[in-house]
Length: 318
Image (cartoon, rainbow, N blue to C red; front, side, top):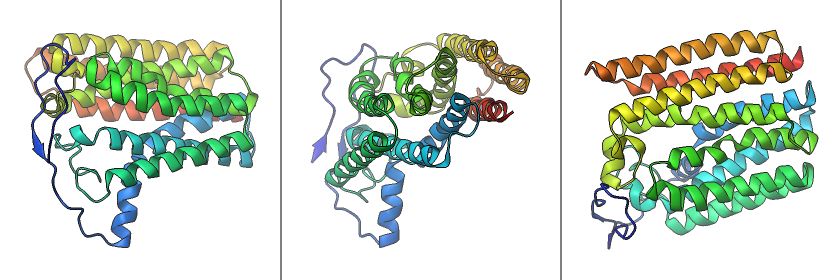
């Protein structure tokens, strides 16, 4: 069977996706192989990154340790929710994942899991996560969890990702949602400091994912996905990377006087300076015609976010 995403509604300048023959049988599998395939559907690295921001936020909201049971429920429920969103994303993106070198080894394009199995798996994970959140947290945290899953799969994956180069910006809402969910799980509401930390993660996603999109620009173009580096000039991409890196650092510093201490302030300032230095390095290399090395910024952004939220946790305990 030949599959192809229809051209109707394609943004100008985006090439047609490559036609791919998907009539392949499901590969023979061992139990260990099946387990690895289902784990891969959840994109564990993304889950890990989301939890890095959630637990420190809960500690800050509680001004200390919020309790083992609550942390355990939110960590488990959040991991299941993020895994569900990722599994459903794999199901919805199976047509383009097989076109990109970066994603063609995922379980669906590799034919180690059937599309129906991936869909059922994602829906079950989502249901379990929402039951856990509803039973042990509160209605606001549960509603935010449900909204984050729906937004990521129905708004971002099905619509934004395929139609506009602003997909990363608007998709950042669900990526930063764990901060709000963690705060709401502790207090039943979200205070200004919680929104400030949400802003840090929201703005951070642009330089983080733009760097990845620069690295895999040809992949996205082959799949017909209008990521910013595919449809805009390198100068435009660099400008947005610098703007959002500055906004990320500014948001982190703006959170300081809202209720954080000197450990956070020093960590946010120093790590922010290094983050800005790495972003400006990518811009300089591009302007000089040198290899951009975008993955340096990608990995530096992960280090930056980890340092900032570890500092949040330390300040909450102190």
